[in-house]
Image: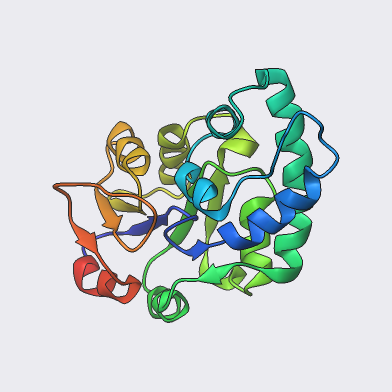
Amino acid sequence: MKYDGILFDLDGTLWNATEAIAVSWQMALEDAPDIPRPPTVKELEGVMGMTAEQLMATLFPQITRERGAELFQRCCEVENDYLLHHGGKLYDGIEELLKTLHGQVPTAIVSNCNIEYAPCFLKAHGMEEYFTDWECSGRTGLPKGENIKLVVERNHLKSPVYIGDTVLDYEAAQQANVPFIHAAYGFGKVEGVPAVHKPLELLELLK
C-alpha cells in the first residue's frame, strides 16, 4: 500500500446523517421564535463540511453570531443524543472497506464536527475498532487543515492521504500538504483530482 495512514472526512465520506440531523434539529428548534423553520435535508447537505460558525451563518443569516453559537450548541446536544441511538446511513461498502483496511494501515477521522459527533458515529455503528484516531474542530478549535496536521504528527505518519467529498476538504488537505482523494459519491464536486464513485473503489487507488 502506497500510504501509511488513511484519513477520512466523516459527512459525505463515511456516512450521510442529514435525515437524522434534520429530525433532531426540528426537535431542538421548535421553541426558537427567531427561527421560522428548521433546515431541510437538502439545506443541511449544502453546509456539510463547514465550521459551526459558517454553517449557522449560511442556514440562518438573520441571527447574530452569538445567537448562532447558542442555537448550534442546543442543536448539537439534541443531535448527538439522536444520532447515538438512531445512527445515520453508512455509504454502501464502507464497512467492508474498513474491515479490509483494518490491520493493514492506520485509519483516522478528521472532521469539522462538534466534539461528540464523531464518537456518536463510532458508537452507533460499532466502528470503534476500525479507527486508531479522530479529531475535530469542536475539540481543538482549529480548522480542518491544522487538525489533519495534528493527526499526522501524533500518529507519526510519513505518507498519509486524506479522503473527503468537498472542495473544503481538498483545500484542507492542501494546507496540510497531504494528498487528496475525492469521495465523489458524497455532497460536493472537486475537479482535477483522483476520485472514487463508490467507497470500495478506494482499495484500488490505495494500492
